[in-house]
Amino acid sequence: MDFIGQSRITMELDIILPQIKDNKLHMNFLFRGKSGYGKTLLGLKICSYLANSNYQYLIGDTVDGIDTSAKVIFIDEVHLLQIPEMLYKYLDKKEIVFIFATNEFADLKEPLVNRCTVYTYEDYTEEELLYMTKMYINNDKFSREMLQLVCESANKNPRKINNLCYRLNAIGNKIPLNNLEELNYVIEKIIGIVDGLDPMCLRYLEILERLSTSSLENISRICGISKTTIQQEIEPILLYKNLISITSKGRSIIK
Image 1 (cartoon, helix red, strand yellow):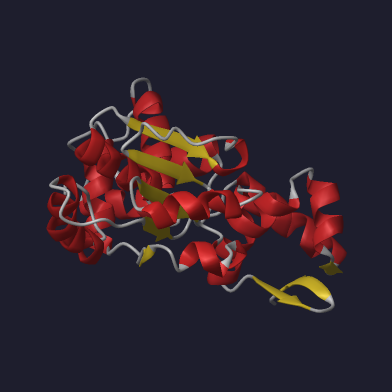
Image 2: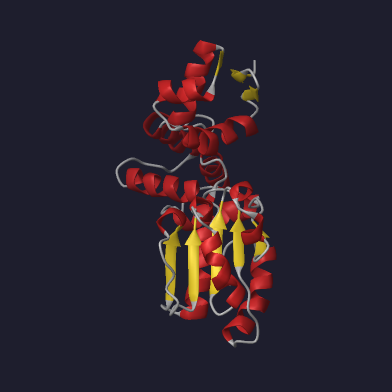
């Protein structure tokens, strides 16, 4: 399987998928992991391998029917599926390979989960992340330290690394990015990422610093950012960096 990282998963898939393709085995897959970790990419690679173009790709909240002529059905963001029970009869027939992906595993119903083989994504190693960054960045002058700065600024998230590299490539067409100082200037002063915190995180901290302690609802209203975005994209970073605490009394800055 041509995929960077997640070797434990891909090694097993390299054994399983040929058997499924030869109709010697049937399996449904559930990929769980953080947002931006490549679940959709791997799922689509499996679709192409098993079915060429004869597969159906759906988002959880848009599922209103199943194409029974498809060899593979991939439902992304499956936690958004309103009535998972509609799938059980298809899963039990074992005529179609189903692939599911989610970053909210706890929201899934057990009867759906136990009809699948569950694969949990691990954090990427530093070398894997540096390899991705080097592949995405269009500048062969980037040193290891510069690549590390990009990884840290993107919070070691593959999708965010890809997006940041895209922006840096565009900026680099007009502004030199030949050393660590120039790169750090662009990331902080132009893109607005400081110590791995993007403008949304910085805005969150600014508000919380002013309020001392506040509820999620209040922060969401003041920031103009949805509670889901705060919980999934902002707070995990701030918690990991030990910058905030969340208790029954609300959110607060760790001094």
